Amino acid sequence: MNREEIILMYEKANGWSPEGFDNTVKELERFAALVAAAEREACAKTVENHRVGWADEDMELNDIAAEIRARGLTSLQRQLIDAGALASDPAGLKTMNREAEQNGEEL
Image 1 (tube, helix red, strand yellow):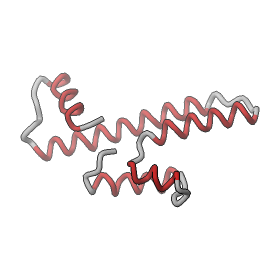
Image 2 (cartoon, rainbow, N blue to C red):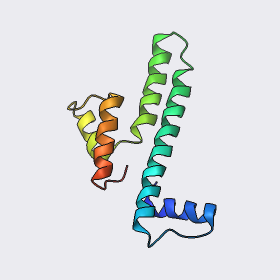
Image 3 (cartoon, rainbow, N blue to C red):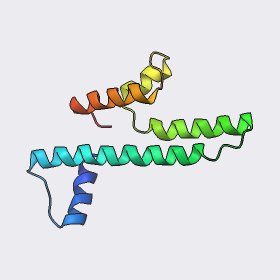
């Protein structure tokens, strides 16, 4: 979700635009990022709950869950994971996402 989409959704929900209220827009962006992360995690867990105990099928489901979670990564995080320089552990990624957000990167 980008800034314009967040503002448009806010306008639809509340009937007025937060544009021009920089702190409000920043708060909305942070809130939207948290909501999106929670929804990704819920979707990934739903996929993981369909594991059946067969290695091949479970590996595919694990890959799907990982792809859902990866949608919240910054491009730098994706590059580091692809290069093997960063483990895809959720705790480390949450810290990196928080830092990226503080630097103004879109998540």
